Amino acid sequence: MTRQYQSVKGTRDLLPPDTEVWAAVEGTARQVFRRYGYGEIRTPVLEETELFVRSVGESTDVVGKQMYTFTDRKGRSLTLRPESTAPVARAYVEHGLAELPAPVRLFYIGSHFRYERPQKGRYRQFSQIGAELIGEEAPLADVELLSMLVRFLTGVGFDDLTVLLNSVGDEASRAAYRAVLTDYLRPHRDQLSEDSQRRLETNPLRVLDSKVDADRQALVDAPAIEESLSDASRAHLAAVRDGLDALGIAYRIEPRLVRGLDYYTETVFEIVAEGLGAQDAIVGGGRYDGLIAELGGAPTPAIGFALGLDRLIEALPEDAPQRRGAPAPTTLVAVGEVAPIETLRLAEELRQGGCTVVTELAPRSLKSALRRAARRAASHVVLLGDDELAAGEATLRSLQTGEQQRVRREELAIALAAEGAA
Ligand code: AMP
Image 1: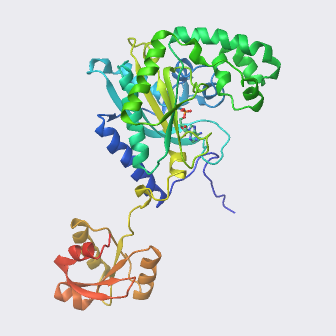
Image 2: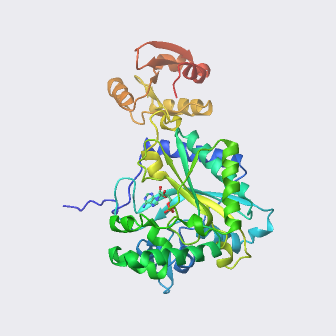
């Protein structure tokens, strides 16, 4: 027996018609983001491992447990990107994008890789759409970015969106909070999971995004970061809230929200939508005012988000216009003595006229051709017999009603459109 192969665990093939839905959702993102002045960036899938260690942080789950890291043939340590904010920041520094008028607005769509336990909505290769607004510290940058995100999510049919908002403050706020949180957690040390006991020493804020029950219980009475915020961080958050209020964007302050990656500063957020479990944020993001400097650029404030496309599409509302997909192509069939090349020729004319058509490429009985067209869910077939060919016409047949009409060849594209065929 010859062995058959399967896609690697945690990865999957996306097939038509699902890919039509993906393309439509991505199309909406491109359209919405362009209206806000964003340009697309495509960074490589491979980066130096150190880029992620430096930026995302050594003590995070992403870097500590989930990276696909390997040594290439020259002994360099490379990693399949687990996220794209660090690669975009790298590209911003590498290409001197600071020279452009600030802020620079970029978006990306692409595959990311994390070694996680595969489950519904969680894959080892998954797709994210993200955007980064680089070079503006004003709170209105946060407001504009969130507004764009909400606009996109409403555009793909989600309503009842709530922005979960918090601030992790500036460096001074976080240092103060780290001390307060450590003091609070020390007496609960034995209750904590092994991971969180380690985090308590290396990076106590990470304990806050633990999903382990014991850790969550230990945190019930933990002080909120809000009390440790500096005046400047408080003012920033207040201004973001005012802006969201002014635009009518619903949000809720979530005092425990700190996000899983180290580079976040000030504003952090997630968005939950009706129909998704409360645990299931489809998108998360925040400010990362220190990251560009950390990667060798000038100090540059920035904010961004990343949205999981796999989960978004699984949760896409039934009535989302992006679900409609493309109609099935009209099938052209040569009848009688007509050579299939004649239908190929006609097909070319129709495609020029904007129609979506396929032809039977080898001679087949009319019955089998009709059956195949119906299985493809075509609404119409076009029959080309000797008679029609000689008269410069074709027969247009509806598969729903069985009705037929003779149409002049040059009017066929218009007739198909009028019938609502592809
Ligand atoms: P993060 O970069 O961890 O903030 O993730 C941002 C979004 O990407 C999440 O809200 C998820 O929707 C999505 N995401 C993260 N990891 C995965 C995964 N393994 N599979 C599918 N989606 C993911």
